[in-house]
Image (tube, rainbow, N blue to C red):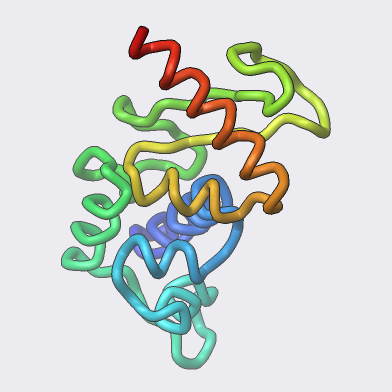
Length: 140
């Protein structure tokens, strides 16, 4: 696999794990149009494909707060600055597996906003209430 295919696969990983699989969320984080992001994800040989060059690597790694060179690592590898944590919305602080568990990989306020923005309204309100309760307890 060449470096451009490796970068494309890593970008797909970012989109799927940190942007709920949405090109629009990824585009917002890196400050590009969603159609441009879509063209970066085209397979080799498809008309209109955009390769991920050095200048775009810096934009992506900065936008996601990734260590330099992350996009050039083998797909599936986790860099040292990425924190992976499973949280259940029903049981804060517990690591659970199942249909009510979300996997969150967040390293910036923008990513947190994108993650929360993908929730259903009632679920988001419940999470925000729990966070505000925790915040109030911290003050006392």
